[in-house]
Image (cartoon, rainbow, N blue to C red; front, side, top):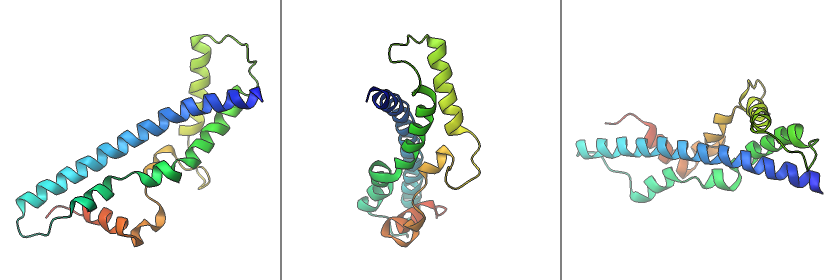
Length: 148
């Protein structure tokens, strides 16, 4: 009921901030890699350039947007539930109290994680482990090689 709606609303707000920040970071890093590769292609006239489709595939975030962030969002939801589930619906939170709740959720998400079940937040930027065998993996490998 209302308890679930409260937790879901808070978790989605906090999760949105993490997802948008991680997507922006990933895109920025990958754009820099594409730019470096493009400059290397222009300077080395003998190499075969990667196609526009290959570059777009490298910049794609389809995996992250479809299922890649699901474990992160589940962790955000668990952290939010632990912090806001017992708050009364009509509780008036001060800015300091809300800040403390958000800080506690962040501490839980960004703290030390020793098990594979709870990877650090930055791990969600990595590609799936089986990517190396796919065409996208080949593209990623080509981009991550040193420029010629």
